Image 1: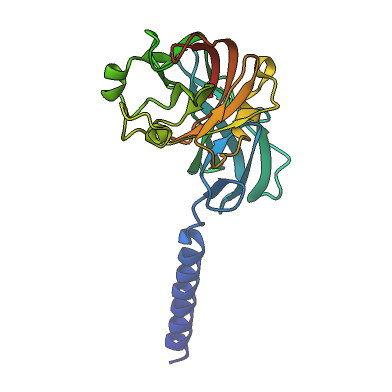
Image 2: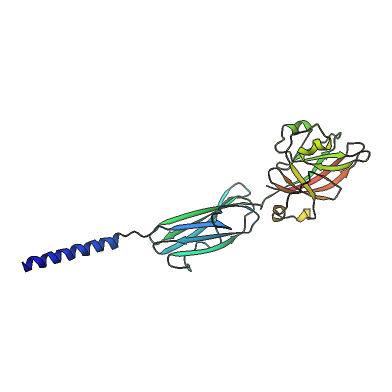
Amino acid sequence: MKKLFNLFTMSAFAVTTMLSSCSTTDDPKPAPTLDAYIGGAGTTTYTGAGPVTISYTATTGEDLQQIDAVATYTDGGGASQTVNVPGFPKTKSFTSSTSDNGSVTYTLPVTSPITVTFTVTDSKGNKASKAVTINGAGSISSYTAKLLGAQTNTAGSFFASSNGTVYSTTDAKTNTSIVDITFAQIGSPTTQPKLISPDYRDEESLTEYTNGTVTYFKSSSLNFATVTAAQLAAITASTTKSVVVQQGGTYEFVNAAGKKGLINVTNFTAGTGLNGSITIDVKVQQ
């Protein structure tokens, strides 16, 4: 009986040891997790001028091995580019053996949008990734020497800052969605040259063109020649849909698409009656 009891005890100990060993060996470690955001947590898309600060937090169950951060964008020649964000890949100086957090300030390339993808890798090769997208204000479209004519001038009175085209009244009516700047001479007996929102021409008794988009104008102290993308992005819309202009004057505008730009009147010819004209240079966000 004693032998039987000892045999049972040894068997029970072996089973217990085996179960304990299996439980320890097979217990899975948590998979890696990674979060990346711009500004507040949860914000993965940003529109504005650089530089932009991106924060990240990574955790792993196994030892942390590496964190990568790559930026993908299309360059000015139309080719896709993928480059390491400065300071990455990161393989040491982590917050702990299983976690890391920090931030990087990334200067936008000439073109946008740009996608920045963070990837964490643990010692077993497990990975987790998170991407953020920046729609930068780093690109500016520029147009020079665009001639706009008043009501009886043969030059077109309508301009689209999205493509730099001057339209006649007839052509403007088929491009109402993109025409955002118009010109006219208003007043009697003395006329004033005005930039006018397309939807506001009827308020100026110009009935040949209606149902246009909304654009707001105001005078500007910005230097047209040296204006930066960041300065354009900082422009705020006025509540004024027309502005009297003069030769040498600079004027800000915000159109219906939210694009912000600057107009420089390089020449004004009064003409006689309503056949004057202005020549403008334009810089606008892409």
